Length: 343
Image 1 (tube, one colour):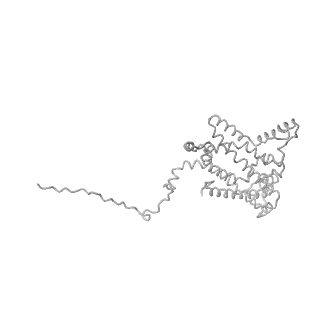
Image 2 (cartoon, helix red, strand yellow):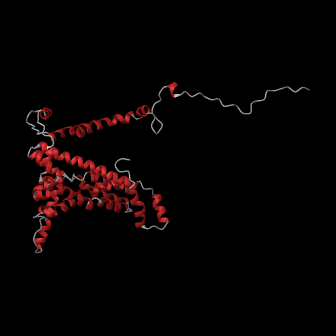
Image 3 (cartoon, helix red, strand yellow):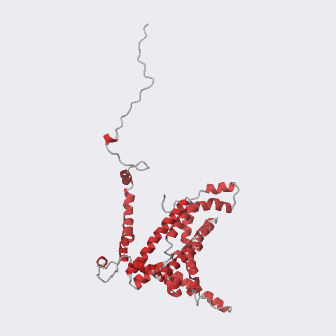
């Protein structure tokens, strides 16, 4: 019996190599992002969101960046009455170079405004900045959600008050004819007028800011606390950590990135300590204690109509503020935090 020869199947098929076209053959490939998608595909995917941001970008360009071009008057002897068109007035105003800046640095009133601004900034940084953090920790420790919501609403309500109303309330409480002075006179003491005392003006302004805006800062820190996983608190409690230990080792590390970010922004906003608030009380305490950079610019630019001089002062303030933001952000990077932007 003859055995038929059956062709045996190959035990292992040889893999077929697929030729890959080289860059020279296919042409230049599209540049891809770290995520793997090209810029064209990413734009096609996000075109709806990008179109939604166009109105906001246009508003920012028109009202925030386009007016920056007006800083050119800081290098001119600007005369707004040359023409009804502001651009024509700029074009026909004579150039004076750095003369306005030289006058500013020789002006004692400017340096007095700088000193008052920095003093108010440091007082508010020490007395105002930690208060929203402490209040957020206290509210977060409340067990009952209803009590927590009511407390947050009460603290947040003054944020909607105008500065005129806030100062009027403080005037009725701490003014010369206010409630505190009347109580002191009824008990045989002299009256007290805190609202017109230059020596306590920086503390008065800080107290007003705390009462009005502390509730706004609470929201930011409570949002950060809401992102903390409950498992961390449970694990810390199982390890024997009490309430203070959990706050120190779990809660505060969770708040540290937000604290660093807000601190960087606050340092960058150091030369802006509240224009409307200070302007409403400047005449009550005098320019020696109530003049800050913003009111200095307003007084010289709007009241005295020396627009070039005021623009030069505002330009100096802007340049210094940018430097403060960059320096504070660098410190945040050294501390291991992201800050305003990444490295």
